[in-house]
Image (tube, rainbow, N blue to C red; front, side, top):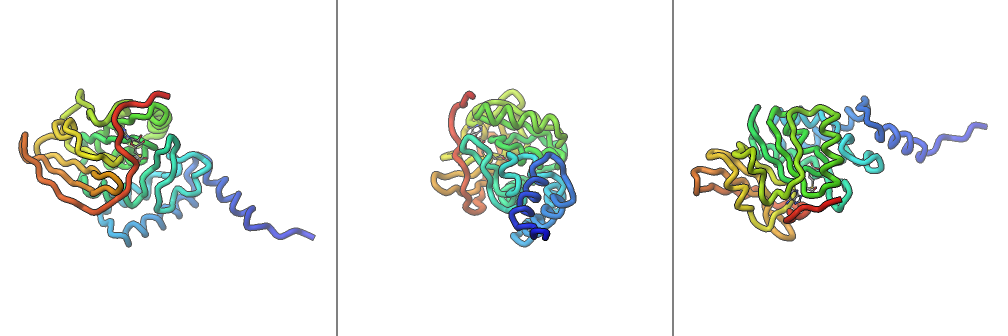
Length: 235
Ligand code: SAH
């Protein structure tokens, strides 16, 4: 008599198919559902939704966590860090109002997923990471898979990335206790920065530089990010 195939078997089969670096119809179906949920949660920018539907989020996760790639939640990426929740990625990207060929500085490369979304939107992305291990791993992914014009640097983001400044847009994907002065300096006049600021919980700040010394600041809700830390951490 043939034994019935257990739920565990299907689960293993499912996670196995999610583990490789292929992007199959199952992944695409899961992404479509995720995009529908982002729409329901209020994301309206069609370009961002299209790009998020196209970029395989499971490429940016370790195989053990790949089955969580299309849930709207943050996921561990090692070194105590997380890939941001898809809703947060969409929300921050929407606030950034990025246009093609703009120079965008990202603080906190992490898994590289946010950088890939910006790259696919046509931005020229400069992304910095303070954890050497994450920097090396992610640089490889972003170099082997093509997600547009993205350059990775092993740097302390509190200092920005002076040599390529000014930037049209700056996005921080870690929660800062205050807005680093260097980032304000490296923003072009008319440019925009999206940065979560606060200790336990962070307020999403959207800052527009209106002159060399003046900024307009808007607050766009509360979020919880991993901390924006000073200094670099070697392997
Ligand atoms: N954008 C990432 C989010 C990763 S979590 C993604 O899509 O996966 C935030 C990242 O910010 C972590 O990897 C953390 O190491 C990094 N980080 C924190 N403080 C930093 C700093 N001062 N400079 C550069 N990176 C920093």
